[in-house]
Image 1 (cartoon, rainbow over the protein chains, first blue to last red):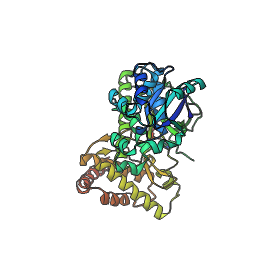
Image 2: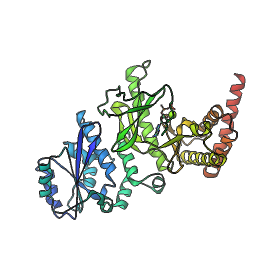
Image 3: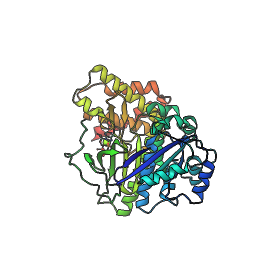
Image 4: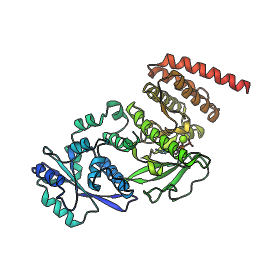
Length: 173
Length: 238
Ligand SMILES: Nc1ncnc2c1ncn2[C@@H]1O[C@H](COP(=O)(O)OP(=O)(O)OP(=O)(O)O)[C@@H](O)[C@H]1O
Ligand SMILES: [Mg+2]
């Protein structure tokens, strides 16, 4: 578990990483039927190339929320949507949300209380591991393909930065 | 680190004045240009530069808003395009259209202008930086991007590895026309002459490297030669 301060928002984001989760199908059902309470973002860790994209997506969700301009239904759904750098909502959830075949899971919540974390730990069946393991659990090849990150770009910056740029540029397309 | 100060002295901790919701604390003004203010802060725990365009009072408000947003979007898109072409730029973190702001990685280093004017590079250092600039411009142009404001202030040399990093894509646009590339190069030549007149041959070094790295060298160079001739005639006439 780690918690990140989101500058300028007086908010924080708590993030947990679980590996080899066995009940993703059930979790997906809970999410789509709105029965996760309090709300959490359930994220397929395979597509997340680092903590920077996650923090940027969180910042963006908070800012748009405070302007009353969320594109999705909830703040936590917006966080998942923002990870994709794509305007296509369905596609974004398919890639970055929890799916039946998700293996490793990132779970995040804004301003989480200790009991919120206990609640979600009770929901997820998998081994909670340190966030540092995210780099090993992400599928770099698939993500590079999805984000269309080529060798030229990797020569001037990390894959994580490449994703950050796409998340930032989405609203400029 | 020292940062070039465009105009006026830096003040500290001024909040944004364009109804931004993200109010970052500890923002420090590092540059106040004609169209934008540049702030330094921390974002996602990283050193960050926020470039905020401000409105022009003489323009019609609605038109002004539209122009600002168009430029902002173009600047962000161009940064990504440049990176895809292999040109180092600050990584983008966030574009807040409502506050006319772009958040990006802060590059630790100094501008080429600063390094040249203060004589901080030896001959080999100058040659290396000029060669890098020429190579990057070739990549940029071959990738169909015109920078639009090529000056030595808009090129930083990164402290950690000495790489040249291009910034300030606010006037950039997409084009593959030799004419546009030629004008881009001519703008740089003029900028070098006016800012670094005591140094000779800078532009030739850049051009030699550009030639080596561009696949469209001859078309671009022919046009550049014409643009330069036009420019010289214009200056002679007055
Ligand atoms: N990513 C960055 N990292 C470090 N310094 C930066 C960065 N971006 C901008 N700066 C500093 O701020 C100055 C102004 O930035 P920039 O050129 O983008 O804005 P501008 O207002 O368009 O400038 P100009 O005066 O050329 O119109 C730069 O010359 C540089 O010193
Ligand atoms: Mg500039």
